[in-house]
Image 1 (cartoon, rainbow, N blue to C red):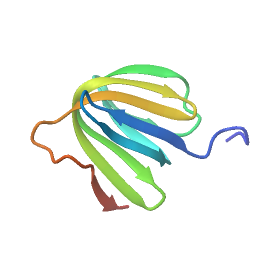
Image 2: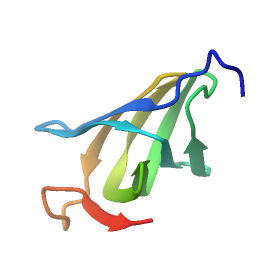
Image 3: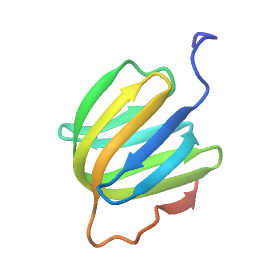
Length: 99
């Protein structure tokens, strides 16, 4: 890795009614239409359509996930911006776990 690459990503997940996530993270997993994508700091720029599935992200020692119903994501080397709809059967907050 180059010393010029960022150490973290700024992750923002936005639904039509709410800001669901606004965090500094180490990695993000997105459910694209063609399978899951792993995003790390320094990722090349990308604009991707999202499918239904789990958006997962890791902050130091905590792992969180959010069930989504599609949308779009803009990926740049230092941030990921996701526009999505939350799955209707989910609670209003992301779930957290260890890992």
